[in-house]
Image (tube, rainbow over all chains, first blue to last red):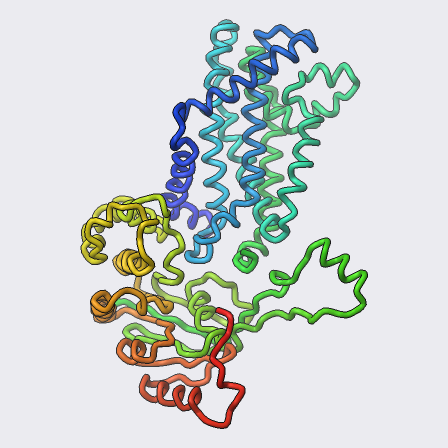
Length: 259
Length: 261
């Protein structure tokens, strides 16, 4: 609890760090903030045009499917990669001032959460235009994806940061692992493709699928996400938090030696 | 007024060797093919049973050769390093001036950096805005305060960092060889400000090689060697003993005061 009090009392600092990350991200580019919207949207249009043909899915519903996948997946990649380097990047601060280390991963999660929120704007717009009948109360559940991304992403990034500061191989291994996870998850490929191939367990047992359902069920299907979706998402958050806590208990104070 | 104090009781600190050993595939293969054993890297025993206490109003100087453990001791007191044995108790808010170039954003102006560093040190934006004018005045950088920090000289950075860190509340001030930077005029001001802080019954611990600085700032000196306390007492006596030790004849092992820091 003291730990979280420390995080709270340093709130101005990590908020500042997160905002200055965003500023530097968009500095000196003509489109600036707009890139966070344009880039995933462009990729979506490209992918849905190609994959829509291959998998014979109508673009109207396949594009928002892909975009929701891109938003969540880009977030996952960003917080894993940047998160694992969070302490190394913040070494100047860590060596000078004693703050809970989790603020340096929180900074990265918040930055990317804002980027993800921006990137998902066209998703809502698209669905409102193409499937206006889907609009309704379940959309509240769709918004729960952002706090859920924070709850899962923050401990995940912190866990990776603890380990990666000690073993600098982690970022390399991570790329491989993430690619593997991407391949077996219904991120761009529709869930029915996995099901048709008899790989239902890759869907139903996959937290990534359930987290994505939080936003896909209301927007694309017009109904509430299932209890299973919430259970899996919260479960993933709890597992991550437990792991981060278990590793951090010993690692937190020793990190400074490895910087 | 304030009951700031630092208490150390048999404090040990080890830098774990794992952080310095080469743990790569290359090293592993190297070990497999070369029979010749490498020099083992042991844990560094940076603080070896350090016991002392400092009370409110005291000005403690840390003296010792490079690598004696002065900076480690300061950082331990600031809570940055985990001690491996002993007891460490620090009452009061600590503000620390260590490596002054750290934590500045080179692209931001001096004025913006005042805010940033203030936030780093745990202050609110409101507090920093309220104190900005005073900090700017003390740092006395003229028009440069609105220039990006990368245009600053080392001395100017020190002035700004010093001005910020000393205007943030906290009863305990830890300084690491920083006052020696900055020009003469600023050093006089810096000393004045430190005296002023001490006047408010606060606590200062400063590590320095500069005996003159220590003599003018401190009331008490702790002389460290190899992570152990060699002497703890009044400043004149400590400096006299240290001089004798360093310049003392016959002890060749002590002659070169060179080490990698």
